[in-house]
Image (cartoon, rainbow, N blue to C red; front, side, top):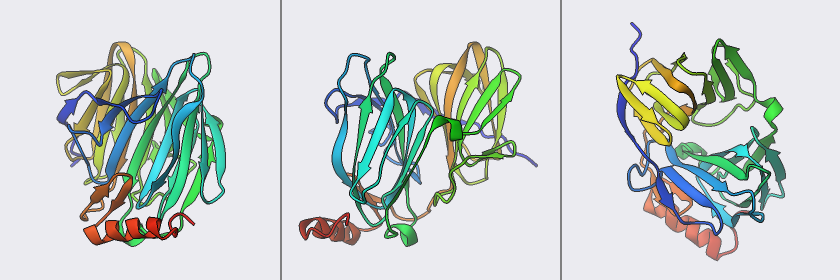
Length: 277
């Protein structure tokens, strides 16, 4: 028998100051929720239209896979493996940090400024030392499923039989950008046991007789389906469901490993100049 997911809790993201000129609202990875295995971080980063090109200069990562989903403007990527890419609104950038990579991401505004959502997934222990890689894709490579009053962009995973263009992400996530016209509903099938969230970016959503308004992160209980119903102004929701690693997770800055020894190894690699080659 199908079991609907219900609200476990919901909260507003935390404002953090980590990049000059960039406003960051952190939904996962701050004091309200540090980790939701395998989700390590969910940031909503924005800059106004009058900004220069700003963002996140060269910095290291290890033990994670990341998604940058562009909402406005463009985002450029460069890394120590020689990969480069720039994508605009609706485009995606996937990076596997694996055994170690240096990269930078810079936002360039258009008339609406620039903004992106960045999501970090912890890699399972047996994949934390795989070679790094990068994949970028423009907006027109993200498939869209439409029905009456509902528009769903399938960033990863699948929705109603339509699969996203990127595969091979270790925790097998479903990532959807959902737009609902006023007073419409969408039902999303989820795998039992997956960590499942909804980030309400615009409008408001009715859930279990509660109202979630922008900007709010909703964390769901376990189950087989999530139903989102918009209110009279419609809504836009970033939906994520992913398989937990069910392993110890130890984060030190931008390194996400399993043990203190793993972190010590990472710092030794950087000191020896062996990191990110």
